[in-house]
Length: 80
Length: 195
Image (cartoon, rainbow over all chains, first blue to last red; front, side):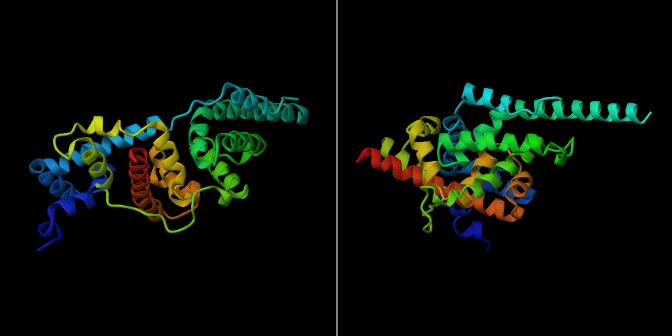
């Protein structure tokens, strides 16, 4: 009896980050997808995690101030 | 003949340096995006990026052409950030709270409609931009550095390991725990907004 047999949703939760990072082994990936195919509860939570990752990237993206860009260009070492 | 050789060498070096500076400046938006959340504040990030470029322009010869320039710049930046004594940042140094991976969704969905049929993309929109920025800044820097480099800066585990000078296994474990800490912070911020 492996861990997934005890509580498949808890096991699926443990697999979520490595699954979305594409670092599961082929066998682990197949196991995770077999559970996701039949478990809407876990599937929702995986989809949420995917949305969250995109949302966080967008939320923290601050444009670089134009003034800073000018200051960086001014740091260049002049040609003699 | 010696003079001609010297002139050729100087001209080649000048050309290489100009090329290096232009390539580095073209990456400045990406460097700033990462620096903004490695540093404690926007002002600190701006200073850090300037110091990074000043140092990079001085030591351009130590960069190996053809290797990852963005990672090279970030390595300078993270070292400077540590030198600047970032440990005074506001992130608490106590053991951070983390929850399981489904915790945040369960909190948000429960608040939305009792956990029934909920569109995952709408659930995530319950988090404001301020919620996310402040939750990220509350994640202790060891974990935050990895999240910022990998999830926001798009660096590979290998690049993040080299930039932070830590083993790749440590990058992976900190990323895993850091995301859980971030989600716990987000869940707490949403609960605070409700109360």
